Length: 109
Image 1 (cartoon, helix red, strand yellow):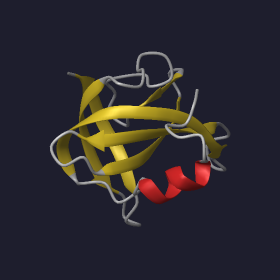
Image 2 (cartoon, rainbow, N blue to C red):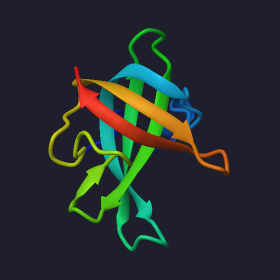
Image 3 (cartoon, rainbow, N blue to C red):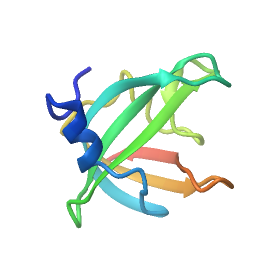
Image 4 (cartoon, rainbow, N blue to C red):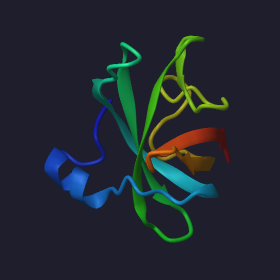
């Protein structure tokens, strides 16, 4: 998997972790392995999205699910094997009690 840009430092500046809360549509720009999640024992999969309506860029991480895939919390798409850069999705995102964004659900458009 490749980052949307060759320079990882540029990617980190371009993509915000402060995603909209609720349902929104976005194009998957790229995906890349993240750090290992301490509490889950598996690496995260970072997803780089551009919101279709505004063009704003966001990064969301998904985690290895107990049913063998990198899925949103409530299911939808295994982003490791069922999603390719350039594809568009309807996403539902929320915030944890600590204010971090999580991907609740996703479906291909």
